[in-house]
Image 1: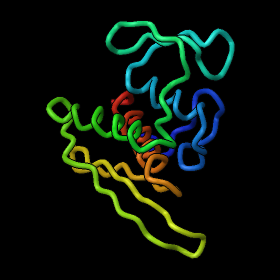
Image 2 (image 1 turned 90 degrees about the vertical axis):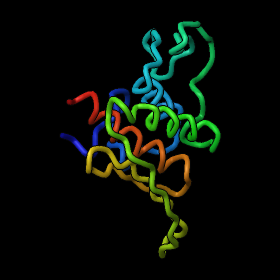
Image 3 (image 1 turned 180 degrees about the vertical axis):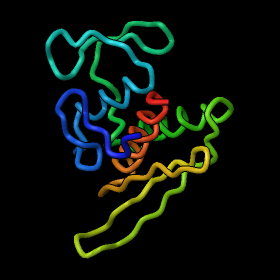
Image 4 (image 1 turned 135 degrees about the vertical axis):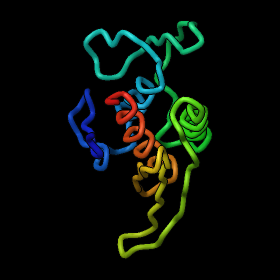
Length: 136
């Protein structure tokens, strides 16, 4: 089980991935969005989980609180199938500035990540958790 998976598009490890459309695309894929990237790194046409095609960039999961909450909702909705207990979040102040930590507790394991913002910490933890789910 890889706790620091690498982005399939750019090869950057999740713990180091910045809040970019590339990261938004990765978490969207893990949340069952489908698309044809046509040779680019960020898709312009999506087949949403509801079966409707949409033409736009993925939601800004890694930079916007409302979009990050969709990641939380998606993972917590897996609770019956997957044993998700809760999301734990806390903020700390360190020498470099404020850090936010998010952690999904799944079947006794913690999939946590931190970042300078809440959305980035949630997406990093979400990717780690969802990649683990796919590896099972």
